[in-house]
Image (tube, rainbow, N blue to C red; front, side, top):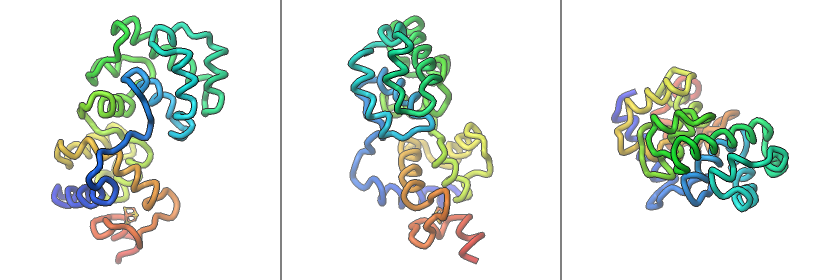
Length: 216
Ligand code: SF4
């Protein structure tokens, strides 16, 4: 796909989903530490489930130091309503310990440093950078971004790192901040995993999937 088509897609989605508004993070946090922990917890569960345990979790464990020394059973009880809670309890304890011990209790802001924290891959690091620090070194690629990007023809890859590289190559840097947000909203409402609503899609004229399956 040409850059001008990618930019036209971006403009259409930005007008549709973010006209005149700053995107509001799907996960509600009050500081970089909460952003980091909640983003790790959000894997394979809903944002709503994560937002619902936030108060309880951070009222008991408000700092990296406190969370690093949390009693595992208590933590698992708090996380029980979200998927994979045992693994996640372990992961956030390790991440909190790394922040406390390696970074003096402050979540780092660079990609390089964030990636040293256990359980943090590029997707989580991008989300934390974007939301907590307003830094955009990359584009967070999740299941919606993957699906929408592949259908549109922005990438042919299935691997998140390669998809991210393709998106970074085609979209100008000023678009990176909102790609994840816009593609998630479009993926949830129109370009669904099953039965995408192509007839109602405002970007179908530039979509490879539409061209190949319905537009011929
Ligand atoms: S035309 Fe269909 S497949 Fe393409 S982006 Fe829109 S909903 Fe998704």
